[in-house]
Image (cartoon, rainbow, N blue to C red; front, side):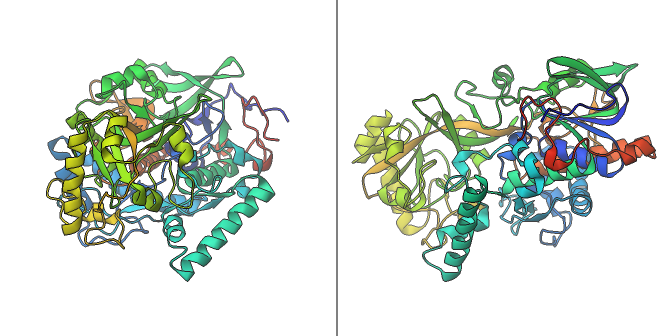
Length: 588
């Protein structure tokens, strides 16, 4: 089957969206649901970008899935205290209000379904912080609904799947961990594993998508079903501007440049995490920094917006959503990256030290704050250490807990093993006396339950990521049973947060703070309203969804009633036959 071609390329479309992550797909789906004809461009062979490998969490206070706020202004208070004087109150208000509207709209007009993620905000010491959860994430999604188009979804990171590709969410992980302790958890786990392995036998894959992968699947289904014209392998080249107004784009298809006119262009191309030049300008330790987003995220949308007068934000608290990352480099050249978000370093029996063998951070703090502490202490790399008991109970990085094997990771050099702490320090090239002293102090804190240095487990957030069955502190445990193990942690990111300056409708602003007509930005192409403070789980996808929705609404409201041609536009192919314009390979 050959790739489809875009009909009437010379004709206008209403909206061009650049990028197919959650922001781009949301903007496309909302605009199409409101009757506009939409062209969605993706430069790679699959949709989803960073979003497809993410946790899929979106911080959207006040939406119908989260507990009602005692004080409706509490989320605003929280962000105001966290961000400080630099906060754009109108922009934050647009995020909070737009998020509530976006959740309702998507659940009424698309295949998207959310549920409560829960969990406390990351800074529970700040006024207005949420304790019961302000974050949602998607329900699981059965990708058989997409027919052959399931192949368009980028797969999750292998490092965060289990049992040969099974995707999990927080409920699955809790039930799987308790399978041998609870009859209910055992039955739940048995059903999940039976379904997973049945899928492998019948379809060659697990059809149950979770987290960011599920949300991409739901949005992709909604886009294809509603008639969004999706192009993969279609890189965006430049914006077209007439008399100061952005009026279309030039993109490449099958080696040929195409020009499409549009009433508006929405940039959602994924930020600049993969670009070494921009990385050097936006972070310390740029040479050691390891980005989790696709290497194709090189700031295409940002640069093209600046070509027509847009500007990047300055003065953010941080230009990245940061996360510590460990790396396995296999002999065949494959590089496997593992983000240490919350599972291992937060548990009792973990310690993280610098090259002097000294602790420098509460190991259970948010992943963003963890990397900030790495920078401040010069702990690049840092060393996550546990003993035999810890490794088999909780795992370390890519190494799963018992009964999964771990010796291959030792042979490949990812997991460093030694019979004593002194021998481990020697292998790591760090100070042995410093490490032994740090472990002795931490063991004392584990016995009393009070970390006198960094207060690990003292706050609600870190306690929530500990082991509730362990006492007296769910985050503190002794490190005593050899052999001992370590992995090296490097500063990294799950996305950028520095982007284009926009207004409350996601319109890109010029040097005079005036909107550039016809040009919008959302996702990480737009500067994050939290200015990189990273207040909670989902503080990137939250504004991505809210402002993608607001951009689409503003485009529609500004243009008036859609034409009959736009309202009646249908998909070029049924979803089960879709190959994607510009695709070099078929889905057969």
